[in-house]
Image (cartoon, rainbow, N blue to C red; front, side):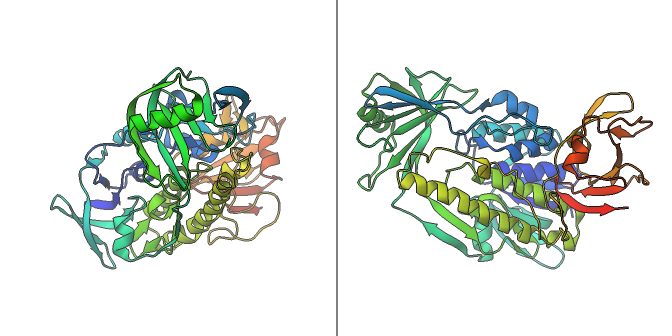
Length: 474
């Protein structure tokens, strides 16, 4: 077959998966029914684990250059400044966690960076090309495109959003709720009179949780706005004059809005697909799970779906592909619970509803107890995220574990004595104070030995997606 994997949907999930496949020399096509690329913010919070994924994909530098750390939020009630607050405490990097804080970048900009990276492998998104239908057999998938073309592929992945054509065609139930009682007015707009070094919350003093938020969109002149809608807002105008009137009613005036890039009324769909796979067809991202925007989980969870699925598709291993659904569906269910609980805090008017903790960072997402994780003991076990740590080579040059993991391969860490093979890529790590030679690495600060609870002869196999596959002692 000319195409090994056909991806429907070119959002962050589809793009991540396409990069994962292309860098493994897997023939991939990615199509999207939209006639043009989306130009708006939508999911703009990139969690620490996603930043680690982006480092492996080779796009982190571009994402950091284009985005911004969190902004302080200035709170105004009845037009008067009352306080400045932060979404979360800023955390200093550690040897194990190099990117501990959320990073903000509009979704369309993130997608642009991912598309550029994908194009470096010679793969481009095919716009205006929808999926019209498909059938599958034991050996492959036959897909009909809206252009009239028929594509033969080994696998099809539906990364085509919450209204997924692929999911509906498979007849997979999308279990959950749509809550019409909780809605938000969202979009992107420019605002004269607001500085781009801060976020803002404007509300009446009599109802401080009912207002309008403005958050700068890094690298652009726009702000992302969000306004919770009450039960009385049944017919909501999303036009610029309507938004201006809403802002004036809570800010006291003096701020002029212009250049409305996009706007929408969002309703909380909280849904999880009953299955993430039927035969040779897979679901990922919003096609498999949709989240409230609270907590910034949706985009990040979709990226990690793709990161999990990519190396398994490339392997062609039936047993590995069988692990995708049990690993990722359990994670999606857990993350849906987190974002839903946060949304309920907003609905209840909780004064701390804006606060975010470690539960949203996805650093603790793992696959303990899953089909690829044998039972174990200790703080670090099979299925856990593999920590980073600084090392030095025989010449004293600094090297990070994440640099060793980078790429499409599995990695074996051999601590101290023991034979070092070449498949998978293997590295011997000597304890602090050792004299290294050849390709040996030294844990000069002791961080790797501590993070991996290493004793002489311990071997740790790291999956291509950066999770511990196995831990053995010689």
